[in-house]
Image (cartoon, rainbow, N blue to C red; front, side, top):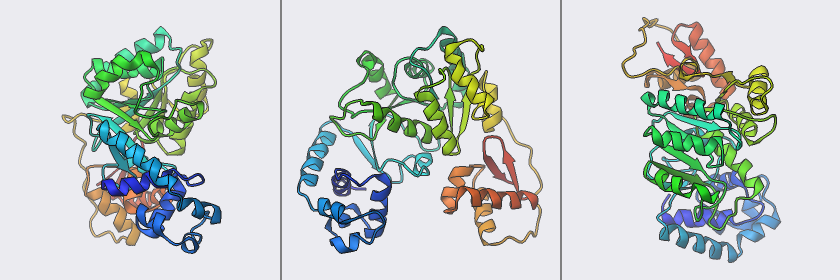
Length: 367
């Protein structure tokens, strides 16, 4: 979207009662953010969930005043704005039903065609967790993944720092606006991250790191990545919320096991015990589940079965797979404009016909 579209998109965000999902419905219905704000009330009220109270707010001049102030901040601080409708919006995140309407970006990074791993855990990290992260990020650098976390104390900031130590791009997902860094002691690391990564936030300037914002941030941490790793966690905590969100988005979740009497291994052990996370002790576990291979490794070719008749959606899914080396389930469903469940059913039929092979980590490839 151009700056004019972003301005109207921000104006739309100022209206109480319009969230990310309802805003997308309105834009799809009208064609653009500007047309939403210019549309007649009786037409807008035909859209599900939009009543007279909201349509009245759409016409308020205050919407534009707030948007103008935020646009001025964006331009003065060289912040990039990425809308849900843009090509460079994170594709995995776009597949989440509650994806942010706008992301504010600062830094130097490109997430297209990149392996992305989120790392979360307790703020009261122990030496056990610290040593795991040090060894794990040193071993995983051969794949050059992007490391995502939430800039909090403990596991988060350790993950960012170890990523920098290993020359890996790292992205902090913030629970506040880009006018500050929280907590303040992480400011120095944040400066380094702008050169070798950066930040995403859905929050406007002036937004404080309130408690509820951390939960909202967690859904971006979970949704943007291929997999989430919980390093250490007590029985309750934000990292377990992130793990639940990742599972709801059909992402792989890993948990580092610990001793049964360790307070900050209780959450990880519980995730493994309840089959909500795969056990991870080294990069080899991640490689196996996600099907990661280095460029030097080759997969044995399998002879394609010829002259197999396919129905419409089967042909669509097969063609998408055949055009790429391999594809992860959620992105394949997104590209084919099919539900996850429908895509799984079609892939099963293609496997039975010998045209598709399932790989670890919800990946598939055409044969």
